[in-house]
Image (tube, rainbow, N blue to C red; front, side, top):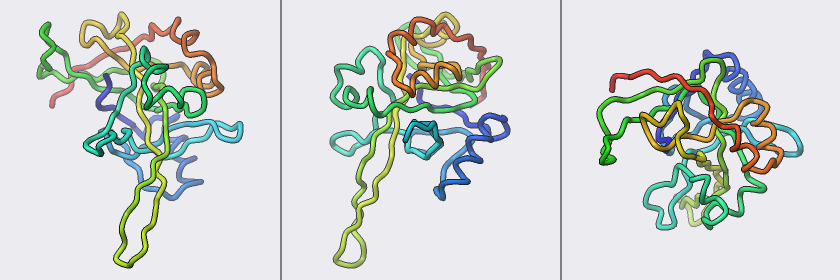
Length: 205
């Protein structure tokens, strides 16, 4: 799974995304270490143009108790929460790196926290987004509804660079593959070449 990632605005490609967001939108968002429920830049295709927007990490659960932050690629066509989004609501979550904790053979999370990066690029993590109405009661007798965009990160079985640390990882694309994903390319075709090279570093908690 992916439960934490990092957005470093000093990286050229991410700085450009931030500049584009700030030019067109006036929303608060977080950089640095991104946690579930934080708002951060994502990339979508709208009106045949690839554009950055702000989304909140995590779909609200049906009982409103917590959020769903990941979507297993194996279950995208089966899960009601995701299956209708694959064709029309694809997104990319740009990041400098993501974090994972090594697990013991029994599955328990160990202390060491690992940062995973690509040696020659930022990460373009595949995701899905959806719109949710957030109804808030005002001090008056009226209600307002704010439409919020939320996203999840798609995960897959760990590749050869990741499997010694954890059994799952984000689905990561190159910039070229990112555009194909947003344009509607079949996900199975993109999965065939996803042994993305990663380097890792132990980070003190």
